[in-house]
Every structure is written in structure tokens, then in C-alpha cells.
Length: 476
Image (tube, rainbow, N blue to C red; front, top):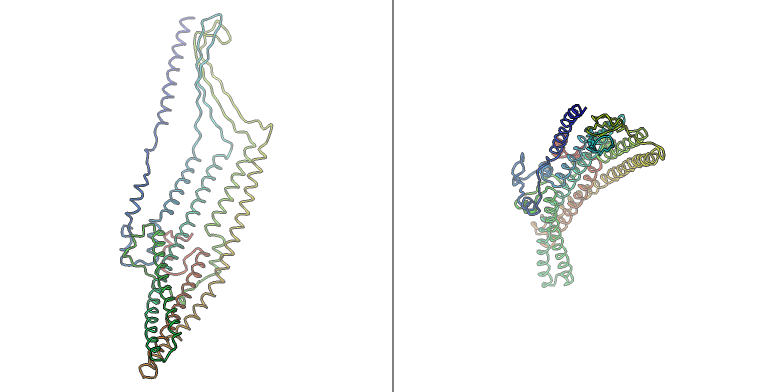
């Protein structure tokens, strides 16, 4: 019996010595980790300061003058907020791999001290593994939820891309409008100065009352203030443009900003407004995001309902030892195996609270979808009503500008024929400049209204940007 006990002990010792090796291998698999990637503010600041537009691949030199599609292509590559959004999409998409994983078992090592009057004391060694048996469909639900989270993140990124496009269009519009306004105001200031000088001569000759000089001086100061304001708006617009693209303002030095046909409001139109309206009301990124939120709430509700069924945990146990007793003190301890099963007993609750919460969140998600759709409906209605009004205002201003030009030309011909004087010509030129400034303001307002229409439809309605639609641009 003693020799047999020692033989059993040796066999048990061999099995016992295998478990530390297994545990060591498990610990070594946990030791690997991604290398550290520290972020230093000074380094990232230096990198941002070094950004230049000429470093953007697949684009011509910025000094040659970009169109709006090229500005947008640069912003899609350089904008920091979009880079953050893409990284967030990648991070959330990683959860799909996590959801597909099979849960690892839990290992427990234990030792028992056995003592009996019949034999010498002995230790009993053991190991147990706990395996989680998921409920039917649990893994599929987790994978579906992870996929919905990824789809929600992508819809948010799509909306952020359009937000960058809208901000870029606004900055470009403000920049070119301020530039043209500044040119017109510079001519207006020059004409005002010439009129003031002419009226001073006429006052000295007694042909004009001195009060007219005060009015001329006041109008000159106003024109100078308007010119200064136009320059200030132009500087701010270029700074906004740089921020939207994702470069420092210094990177735009020497870079021209063009939008040659921006004031050609007559060429703008929405080709298929009913189709655009319908597509926006069912397919804008906010609608897609709200749908994914509802699907996610539905999936979580199904998961809470599934918790009414037990989730089993299976625990196989193996133990070994020697020189001790268990039932019969005359027999040495060899080894023993056991199998345990554990699960929740739904005695105090049946998860009705969690199910009710999930049901409430699903209802709220459905109402959120309706609210988002109603907001988009309002935005489209307002944009569609404002655009024709802005068009008519621009047309009226264009007719007034034509009349002002005809009046100026008539005065110039009269001056050449000796039937007028220079003051009348200057007054006509000033009136023409004011009419063209009003036309410029009307064109700017019409472009804002047209941009609001594009924002409502979430699609470019004209220009080179529409080519980016097929290349994964702002449109969803």
C-alpha cells in the first residue's frame, strides 16, 4: 500500500507540476502590450505650425489658386476635427472584434489541508476552471450592437464632414465678398474725396452752401469706415478659412482666394427640389444616426428580455494529493474530479426593472427620430422659402445697378459735351458705386440663402464640389 501510495503521489506530482507551467504561460500571454506613444504638446504645436498647403498630396500648388473642390479636398485631409472623428470611428469599430470574442475561462488554484487520526496529515491540491455559457443569441446581439455603434459613429462623421464643408463655403464667400466690397469702397472713397475737393472750390466761388461740405465730409468718413470694416472682415475670413482647412493663418500668406462666379446668382438653381427634399428627410446623417440609435435601443431591449433565461456557468474541478484521507482512512488520496453548474435564481426579480428602462429608452429613441425629422423639415421649409426671396432681391438690385450705370454714362457724355460739370459726374459715379455695393450685398445674401438650401438638402447643388460626391465627399 505504501509503494502504491508513493506511485500515485508521483503520478499526482507530475500532474501538479504541469499546472504552474500552464499558469506561467497564461501570465506571459498577458504581459504583451502596445508600445507607449506619449503625446507632447510642444511637439504637436510644432507640427501644426509647420503645416503648409503645398504639402497636401494630389493637389496643384495653392499659389496657382484653388477652386472650392480643391479647398474642400485639402480640408478633408488636414482638418483636425475630422481626423479626430475618423480616429473615433476606428476606436468604436474595434468593439466589433471585442463582441465577437469568446469569453475566456476563469482559473482558480486551491489547496486543502487534510488531517486524520489514521494517517499523517496531507495537503490536497486542486484547480478549477469556470466557463461562461452565454444565452442563445447573446453573442449575435453583442456583435449587432457593436456594428450599430460603428454605424452611428460613421453617420456622425459624415455630418461633421458636411459641417466642415459648410464652414469652408462660408469662409470663402466672406473672403471674396469682402475683397470685392473693399475694391468698390476704395473707388467710393476716391470719388467722395474728389467730390469734397470739388465742392470746396464751389463753396469758395459762392456756388454752394458751406453746409454741403459738412455732408460731404460725413459721407467720406462713413465710406472710409465701411472700407475699414470690409478689410477687417476679409482678414477674419482668411483666418476662418485657415482654421477650417486645418493650417495656421500664416500658411495662407501669398495664397489667392478665388470664387470668380460667386455673384452670378442668376445661374444658381435647385434642379430637383422635391427629390432633394425627400432624400434629405429620410437619408440625412442625423436621420441615419437617429435610426441607428433606435436600432441600438431595440437590441438592448432584446438583451434585457433575454436575461430572463438563465446564463450558465460550468465549473469543472480536479484535485489530487497523497498521504491523507477523504472517506476511508485506509485508502490513500489519489485524485478526484467534480463538475459544478451555477446560474441566477429569479426569485426576487425577473429583470422587469431593466426591461422597463430599456423599453423607455426605445420609446425615447423613436420620439427623437421624429423630432430630428421635424427639425429637418423646418430647416428645408425655411430654406426653400428664403431662396426665391433672395433671388428677387438680387434681381431688383441688379436692375437698379444697370440704371445707375446708365445715369453715370449719361452724365459722362454730358460732361464731354460741355452740358454738365464734374460734380454731377462724381455724384453719378458715387450713386453707381452705392448701387453696385447694394448689388454685392444682395448677391452675398442670396449666396447665404443658397448655402442654407444646400445645408438643408445636405448636398452641393452647383460647382466643382459635386464631383466629390462620387468619391466619398460630404454627401451621404
